[in-house]
Length: 253
Length: 167
Image (tube, rainbow over all chains, first blue to last red; front, side):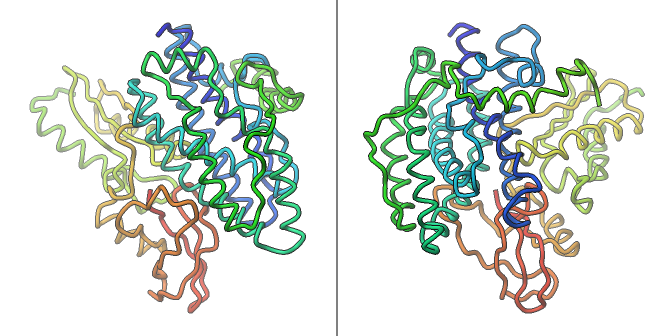
């Protein structure tokens, strides 16, 4: 697999974790309860840590001397390849929980497949490391889905609305673009389309315990993030995330 | 520093590493918590391999730095600290000494065995209170004050406590 294609493949995974981690970080000091504030930022920290490993590796593969910071802070909107789901606004706590729940269930299955199937030693190592952390994230978001869904009339209505609103951003996770197919053929990448059935089954299991109605699996789905075509939200995330390093390039602690 | 016997030097370095503390849980050292993975020579260069506990653990940079300081202070000149991700760190690597120290420090040590990653919802594990040993405890949050801990409270002595969760 050519360097640039492998770089593009790794960047998609890195950006998913980085942008979602940055989003969760916005909850710092604003969580609905102290314990949950700490939980959301713990998950954010794990995701940013995973992104650091992936970005560092992407930079090494690219071979142009870009490190994790240059890749995180000096790329623009079109260069980011995260799925749209990761950049959605936090909304209310239920919206954040649902976005996290969909992502956690996807990343768990993806890292499981990657650690078992990828021929790339470093991707395998990052996946094997990350899945241990994602397993905790998944339990946490699933617990909240049940607690809010099977909670009060108000929490049930709100979480069902969040599920219905965010559902259209889940389809993109399972799409295979040209680069994904190249990576799969090279034995490096995984076939994310094959993860969809297991994802739907797991999501449904939790929704049943939460008395949440499963949306239509065949509904029309948004996409574009993996090609660099983003919602208007990403620019604002980058503005906040990149401001300091762009204002003071090469600044060191 | 002239190294005459590499085998003995490696043994000394392991002893040296037992004095390098985890900045977040200072009763743990990098050897007994399983963060120091390997010590060897590449020709004349001493290599110390460490592995992160969690991907985003902010203590890792400090640990890497402290290992270098310890080597420098011991007189080493030609050395390198490398980070590896594989095999991934697990709480199973905490030695009995580390577990005992955690308990004395007021942090419940990890229960044996890694958790069932495939579970969709969190399990309700019985974690004895490190203060009064009561088993009448409850989990407040699966995420605690650092990446490696969960937050519990004891329903008998009413103290909140950290649990070093299995990973």
